[in-house]
Image (cartoon, rainbow, N blue to C red; front, side, top):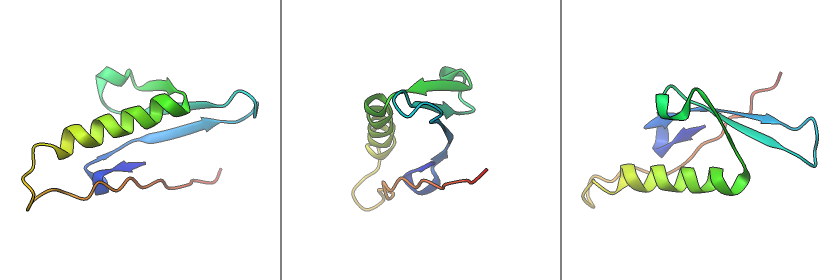
Length: 76
């Protein structure tokens, strides 16, 4: 997954071995994420919103980057 047109990229891993109990893991180089951090859908949405707003806010109107988030599906 890429946030803000590539400003920051992470790997999301979905464990869907039990469709009734999905697990989403965020893998990141930041130590605050501990390498792997588990999220539910709501927490993942909130984290993406928080990071995008925090990185976007300092720019003036002429220089704000795109806030597009891109997901790439990797097949096993």
